[in-house]
Length: 114
Image 1 (cartoon, one colour):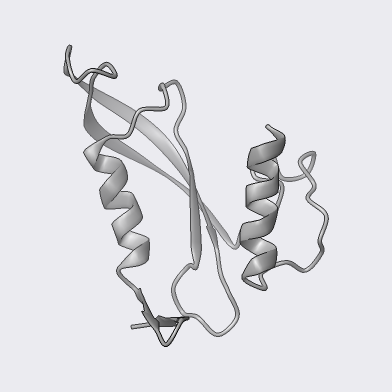
Image 2 (spheres, rainbow, N blue to C red):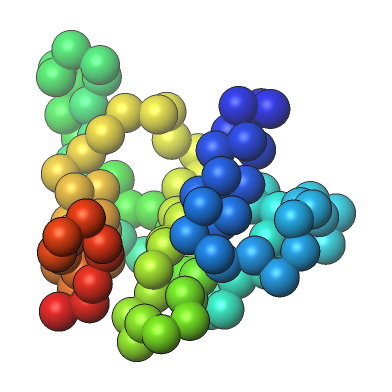
């Protein structure tokens, strides 16, 4: 778990998104940092075992935590809590990621909003 905590800290600190350098997991479970927006959404997707077998349709309620960065209109970071599922990527995960990344591009080594 320390690796994940370090990655989250580096993500926020490296992008100038921290008011404080110390995470507070008691006040902000899972991510340790206060988000700007939190919402839940139920999605339906196909789940399968790690080898691509035993496909079944699953409905799951995800919790989205969005973090804004000064000077950007769209959330700069979106963390998603997926309950009761193994850590296996699904096509629905790619859509969730794309819904954030599509607002940004890299120009001369800097992240800019489209």
